[in-house]
Amino acid sequence: MTLTVWGRKTSSNVQALMWCIGELGLDCQRHDIGHVHGGNDTTQFLAMNPNGTVPVLQDGDCEPLWETGAILRYLAARYGTVSLWPADPLQRAQIDKWAEWAKLNVAMNFTGPIFWRVVRTAPSKQEPTVIADALAKLVPFLAIAETRLSTNTHLASDDFTLADIQFGHVLYRFFDIPIARPALPHIERYYSELTQHPAFVEHVMISYESLRVGDS
Ligand SMILES: N[C@@H](CCC(=O)N[C@@H](CS)C(=O)NCC(=O)O)C(=O)O
Image (cartoon, rainbow, N blue to C red; front, side, top):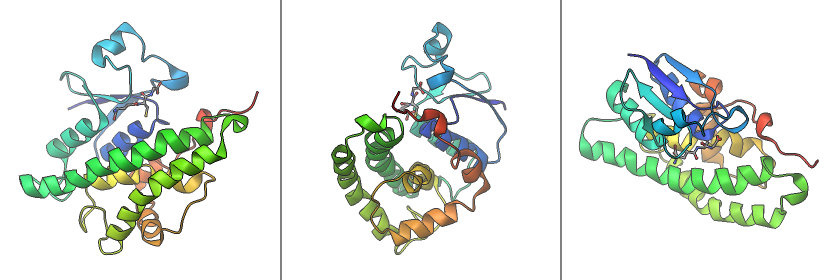
């Protein structure tokens, strides 16, 4: 088995994938593709992923996979433990419910509308009210996670599951950038525990300075 990943390490989706690969203890070869590295508009890359986005994963010589959620599910089903991704369809769906929820509501409402505005937009063009509005949209979803984590150690259950990768991979940036965060003590406890995972530290808690846009 040879896993190959195409995608720059500063991509949040690549970070989720690499964190999962690290949790599973799998070897992989990663190629820096996208953003300043380019390479995602070549004929060769578009033949693997017509969207021109990262990450792309190939396991051996299989047809390349794209869409991070699909890739994570594949890896968890093929190489994961029962607690990460149970075989029972209903147990699995209970975890998938939270994984989908986290991707659609937390990651999508954070990465583009907030992280990009704060880091990937020149300060003079940031429009603080737009950031405040985006945060106001995100907070009700975080409140759902906050309530959930007041009774569960992890998002979907008391075990670490795939849902934690889909939710947790945005938390480093969420807690690191200068925004008016509300108090979220249960998410903070949970985040602090994620920082004890070596694969989280290696693949998620990394500098995003190469993405920063300044005023020229
Ligand atoms: N729905 C896709 C979205 C992929 C996506 O938008 N990836 C971003 C990075 S997070 C990308 O490729 N951006 C272009 C680039 O890096 O050049 C997924 O979940 O994999």
